[in-house]
Amino acid sequence: MPIRLHHHGRVLADVVSYLRCPICAGDLAAEGSALRCASGHAFDVARQGYANLLTGKVHLGTADTPEMVAARAAFLGAGHFAPLAELVAERAAALDPGEGCVLDAGAGTGHYLAAVLDRLPGRPGLALDISKHALRRAARAHPRIGALAWDVWRPLPVRTGAVAVLIDVFAPRSGTEFHRVLRPDGALIVVTPAAHHLGELVERLGLLSVDERKADRVAGSVGERFAPAGTWSLELPLSLTRADAASLVAMGPSARHTDPEVLRARIAALAEPVRVTAAFEVRAFDVRPET
Ligand SMILES: C[S@@+](CC[C@H](N)C(=O)[O-])C[C@H]1O[C@@H](n2cnc3c(N)ncnc32)[C@H](O)[C@@H]1O
Ligand SMILES: [Zn+2]
Image (cartoon, rainbow, N blue to C red; front, side):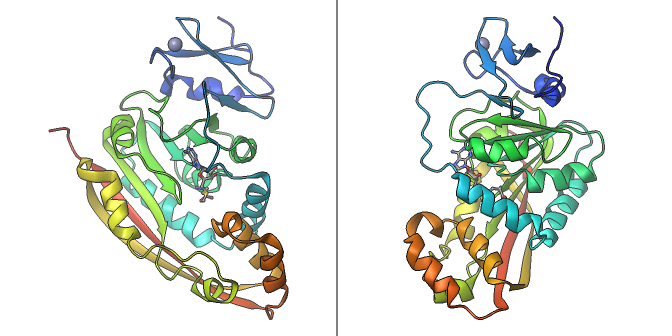
């Protein structure tokens, strides 16, 4: 069967061997502007380069909006979180078993996945996200990224044992499925905000604060299936313009929960430079054998 995914989704032809049909779990092949399985289930590749594997009723409640994605792209593009991308890429390279793809669950704009792929020459990457606005960016974030519209709460459209390194950066986690798709020698890397993440802005702007029990919940959410393989704390003192601060707020969860007009007014009243501390926890896990 000829593969004709030249302009859009050419990369999907390179990652399709890591995927499985989300309906029947059969192999998928790239065909025309679609991915198909032998049973005839077909999934469109959008002009913007991502494949839409979702069927049925899709709950878009937690999908990043166009405004959130634009703010995230602007903020990350300015390099403010570059040391985090660097740390994630370094940990991924250190834990990489040498074969298999890299999966980013809730990849957003593909910023962190691109950094990991830069460290792992020739290796394919899968960016999963439920937001089409994010996927448009992710599909272009790196020449080796195949971007897929998917809901991380559903069984993943990824073959068992296909993934070398799975990264999850401020995104939903599914321990059972992460365990299934990872190789036995693979690694999971989870990034969460530390309790004092953006503390100065939380106070001054009335943002949502980070749940203090997040650390417990990370371990809990990946469960017995993973063994802790290291924790790294990263603190970044940022010195921002008001425009940067506005992007930082707009890309986060507070954007959904706070009146935009009120936020705008509070940000306009901040003195420049806006000094704020970003604080992250990076946790690595080894795959535990199934007992
Ligand atoms: C806080 S953003 C983080 C994005 C990216 N990892 C980053 O750090 O730049 C959370 C991302 O998860 C996506 N998301 C939310 N719920 C999801 C779900 N159920 N399945 C897949 N992606 C989801 C959102 O659309 C958004 O892009
Ligand atoms: Zn099928």
